[in-house]
Length: 256
Length: 244
Image (cartoon, rainbow over all chains, first blue to last red; front, side, top):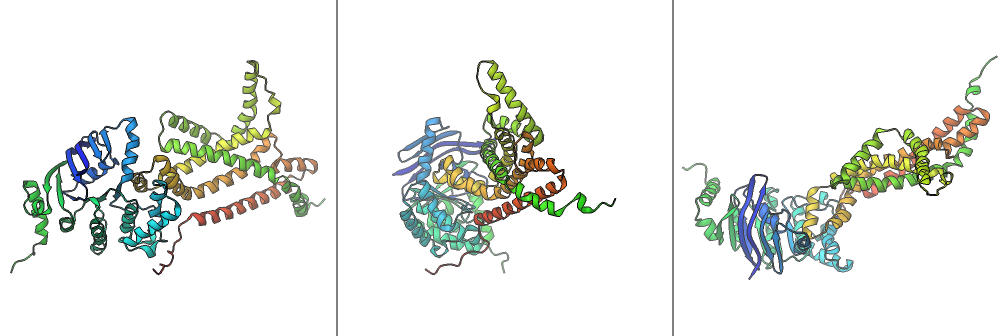
């Protein structure tokens, strides 16, 4: 059953068309990997789902919430309602610098979900434990390593128990060692049955954890299928070319 | 006839002047404190209006800021002192019945000082608001916070830390600015000195005594703000990791 549906989403920045009529339907429990060249609207697509970007045209339907774009006055409230149920992990994590790891995780529970403080602390501690950072709960973001910060960001999102988690290149700002650290965490979450949309350049990882892969180019979804279908047998020339280039890097430089 | 240095400046007299001046410190602090409240509230308002680029209000705020920053505080005090009664008299000529002489002199100083400082404080606030990471605002928004919640929970607390040194400056500026309020006839420490010196013509001793008093007040304020800043700042060193 589709939990999230996008219909004919259009978004431009000035003259630059970034999303050119996106249609997408995501089922509950789906782990959707979104890949493609830079600047083809992958991040914009994610950010349009929770309305951090405002598409000019289209329809977003999430369970019982339907938003017709562009938004009219009354629908603004629905945007907040939608955001409360969709979690997001950003490329640069955007932790609250003035709050400790624990306070970061608690913030949304207190302010948005209005849970009592005691309960909140327990939920937050559990969430930190899941990402292996319970012991670091009193650390401020600036005291944490590049691998710990995205994990706190993940815990912050998980604690809210969102229906969908959007991950916007959560590893692209990290060095290879830290990438593994974060990917392990994401994999563990994926196995818990969350619905996830993941934008990433880690093709191997995407093909391992997702059950569906989208290939975006020029603001359009040009490949949509299982990882096997998209990565091994792409139908379009553009995707073929893209994966060929990627694979070239993996080939040895010399043949003897 | 020989003249000694003590004929021009008697240290003993200066010290003896201080207790008389100290008596009026509460008036100085009251003036500065009230003006500070006005400046913080109006300053924050102007800052948010300019930060959010609110239609219609934003250009008005900018014009106000330009006027307040572009004219000396002393002139503003005089304009308030003579201007407010003049305006009230116009109202009276229309049938209102306000006794112009009843308006406490504090009101003029309070308005002129408060509004003058508000202009400067608002810029401190605006710079501080703009220093808050846009990404954190986005993260909070994505969680489902309303803009009011983001402002209260994320933006203002972070901006406050950055604004503290500027606010400290503004408080010190206000305390010293109250000396100009003597021109409105408020008997605070500077005017008190004029009165006392009028009797014995010992102006220099009085002014030096005043300088010492203002300086000490400033030093105390600086120390207080240092403590507050320390409380707000994230510690350099992380706490030790707890054993799980």
